[in-house]
Length: 151
Image 1: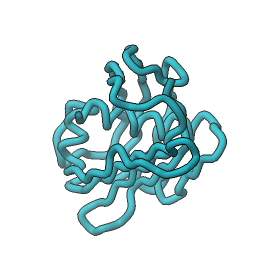
Image 2 (image 1 turned 90 degrees about the vertical axis):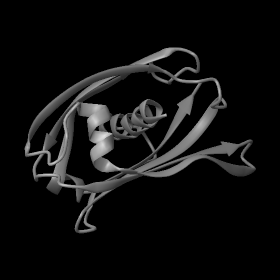
Image 3 (image 1 turned 90 degrees about the horizontal axis):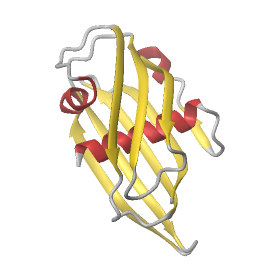
Image 4 (image 1 turned 30 degrees about the horizontal axis):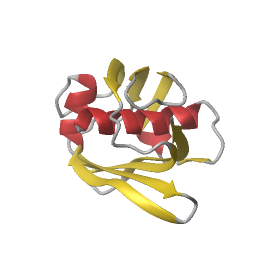
């Protein structure tokens, strides 16, 4: 499941960086970290097919500990929202999954490449996702929100 959540968080970030419509980028993020050279294929994501992504994460302050909150909602037939994911994880565990690094994570550039297959449990259509990370001082380090599609 952590690989799937990693995919969804990267989808939100990549969509934001590539100028996708209906996105929100929190300027607070630039104080703590920046994601550059991000790419995600295929676009849109397809159920049952392998997705590939890569990026470079530039961390500006040491990350000692934190929480990452991931939420994914599907707008079912423009009638009601169905929440598929609403979870909070230890940010350091998440960093291990993404970067194979452990906390404390010092400032620096961290490239990553990953791939996984999106399961068929996700319905095709439009999704709204949020990924928010907080540090040990409860400061918001990152907030990405975006609409995206899954075929």
